Length: 145
Ligand SMILES: [Zn+2]
Image 1 (cartoon, protein in one colour):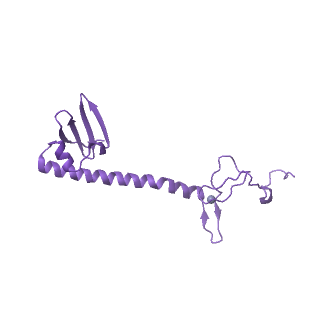
Image 2 (cartoon, rainbow, N blue to C red):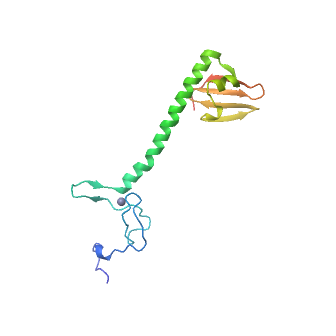
Image 3 (cartoon, rainbow, N blue to C red):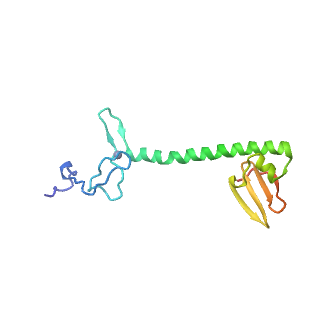
C-alpha cells in the first residue's frame, strides 16, 4: 500500500531487514533511510535534551588524535630537555655513547634526512647531524620544523 503524495513516512511502513545500526548507540536504522546513513537521526528526549549520535561519535573519533598529538609533543619536550642537559655537560658535539647515556634515540626524531652519508635528525628545537663513520653527533639549534 503506497502512501499518497508527499506525506511523511509512517513508522509502521519502516522495515529493518538490512540490519543497519547506528555506529554510536546501536539503534536500528530503517531500511528506508539513505544508503550512507550510519547514525540514527537526532532526536529529543522527554527532558528536551537533543541526542545527536553523528556529532557525538565524531567528537569521540577525533579525540584520540588530539591526545596522541599531546603525547607526542610532551615526549618531544622531554627529549628537548635531555638534549639541553647533554649539551650543558658535553658540549654540542658528542659521541654515540653520550647520546645513549642521555636516552636520546635518533629514531625518535620528528623527521630525518640523509645527505652525503650524514644523517640529520630533527627534534623539537634542535637537529642532530650524525656522522655514522666517526660515530659523532653535532647538535645545532633548529627552530623550524
Ligand atoms: Zn544513535
